[in-house]
Image (cartoon, rainbow over all chains, first blue to last red; front, side, top):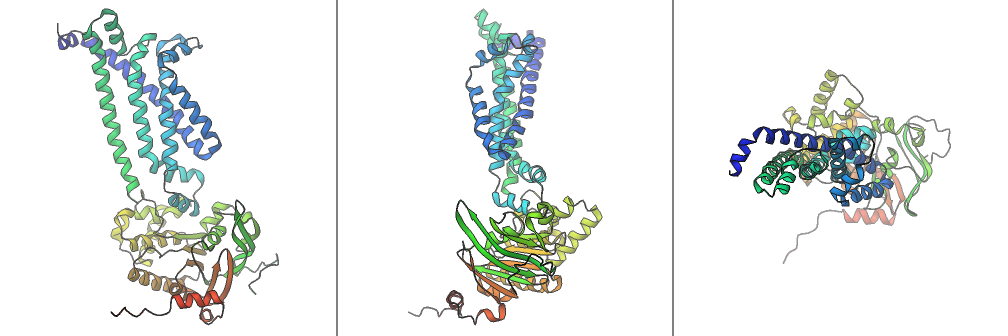
Length: 214
Length: 260
């Protein structure tokens, strides 16, 4: 049985695990964005916090992923279900690119434009929403892109703690010493990562042109 | 007359007053003991070299900076007592190359302050169109982005944006500095005509003596953070102050072409 035949024979399971994989990586990226973007904004407002926040996110990033899953295992509620645990761990990994790019994107807005806005009497909030975030959006989406691709790749390891996803095939293939089974997990995961990378890359370029319109 | 030191100067004809205002940053004085005032309807040109404290002076008016000693009053009230947002919306600010928002169309750039002041849409539309006429731009440009305009057009949009909510005070920082000489000369003449109608309190920062003489009622010359002279424009060129003489000489006539 070759690879394609294997995929066809198991298409329902391939489909289910892909869906599960998208859910894991998608929810994790969303969570990372919901926390990371506000944190990135916060440290442009309170620069004293920037070292601590960026440093913290950096340290999380250096923890090996399997070890991070292990650390979170005893946590209440979260540790009860593999899915919850995996989403939390993946979200933690996604924080750094989102915080860093939000921070860098806002700091990178032409100071003359920000000052013009301030001089026009924009409040800090109006300045953020109407000027800084739109002009930083290309860089922020670049961070989102990194976080999403990272999540899709790392989510394969989540199968080790019973979270499901395409990693199931990979781990099963490893146990069975069967390359076809490994590829049944690895290829859809890689394609998923490429597709997300491409789509967010396009969005990033479209938003990036905003900056050039000066 | 130009030393408004008494605090009861509720003389509301004075739109802007600097009362021994100084500003320093990290111990470096950028502006020292400035005493200067501008009446409603008057155009004061701040003349001086780069780093002479002109821009610092402007930023003290709309509280982008606060004086480290002395005080600045706008319409008789200390800037420190103003709500900075209200203050800034009553002071139109024009900077070099317009300082326009690159992601806003011309229309949204001009409508910026009326919009945040919650004007109704019909009123905003009418005002934007009125301003386009005022600054001599075609309505066709309303949907363009700043990158799609010439330097002169951007500058005109910058002036329109500053005028949008009809602020009583207008401050301009090297506003025409990035323009080619012909466009610049046009803008200067139009601005002068505009000010004759508007009668705002205007402070115009430049390092160009010609521009100063063309636009000013009064010229204040600054050097190294200090006010050197403050004279009616008509008397400026006759001053014996050495720095004024240096300026007048630097701008006197066109050079003779080199003959080889």
